[in-house]
Amino acid sequence: MKVLTVVRHAVLATIAASLLSGCAAFERIKNIGQPPPLAAVDNPTARPGYKPVQMPMPAAQPASYNPNSLWRNGSRAFFKDQRAHQIGDILTVKVNITDKANIDNETKRSRDNTEDSGVTNFFGKQKLPVLNSALTTRLFTADSKSSSDGKGSVNRQEALSTNVAGVVTQVLPNGNLVIEGRQEIRVNFEIRELIVAGVVRPEDIESDNTIDSNKIAQARIAYGGRGQIMDVQQQRYGQQVMDVILPF
Image (cartoon, rainbow, N blue to C red; front, top):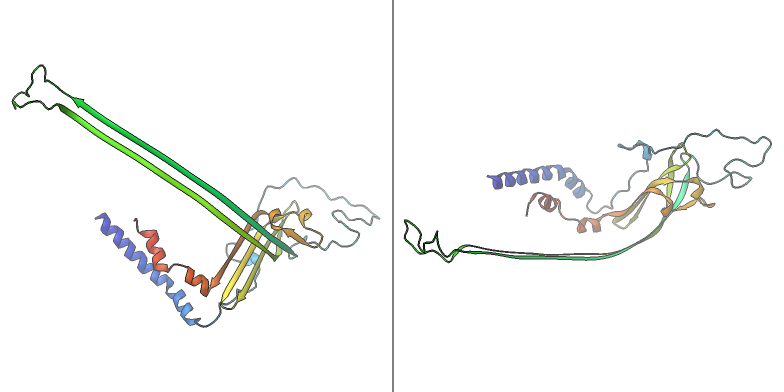
């Protein structure tokens, strides 16, 4: 009965997935021979699900003014600071990621148990009462053996070096800047997409209006692609559904 229920759910899920993917499949058929379209340039704060960043802030401090002074508070020069400092300003994020990890673990366990109980007489008699049969020399015997061998290894090496321009989407009460940058590059029938988002300190922005990615707090960096090559590398939606549903 449980097997029939699992099979029924698998069939229903497959049908639902087929119906949901119908529009996507029709769109792909319509775009055969055409390059994948680029996403429209839009306002990040107007996207569905966008939420302003809220973080613990220190107590507000009153601004100090210096009359007849050529030096502005927070300025690094006598002239206007060209670094990003308000909503809508643009700065360049230098993405430099070098990640390397080598992990190799192995765990072994084994256990061997034997239980043997011998009986030579039953209350002084060599035969069982009523049955009048001889006693077995082994009344209880049990053997058990268990072993496990687990191995795991990780060998990862990733490197990414590129630049992307980001936009200041929010200024936090303590002066930190929330930034987000998106970049799409289309080569033939493949689109490469780079997304960078996080919180930066104005002091970490260099004089040429750039900042390293390792100085971004709450950094979210995504690098991927879409197009014909990625389509071939992905499993078909039916196989993905069955991989999730099937218990074996």
